[in-house]
Image 1 (cartoon, rainbow, N blue to C red):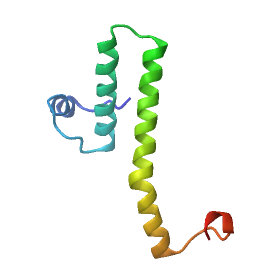
Image 2 (image 1 turned 90 degrees about the horizontal axis):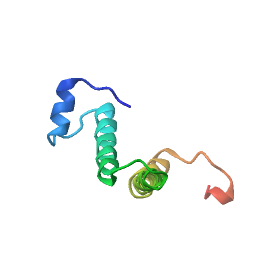
Image 3 (image 1 turned 180 degrees about the vertical axis):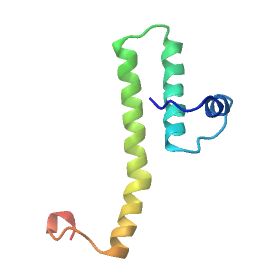
Length: 88
């Protein structure tokens, strides 16, 4: 858990945008905590829902943003892989 300073917490808790990786982590954790609080109690099913949503968000970021970025860099700098299965 990112333990950011009180000023950053205040800014983020009032809708400010994260400016550092720690602040982004804090904002994500606050969103998750709000969701969990709305459920009224901690249950495995609620935690499982959260983990699934976070994992899918991670995968979507990778699929839509990171993979295309890496493809562009591979074309510009050259591939590492030579095997036909890797497209090299």
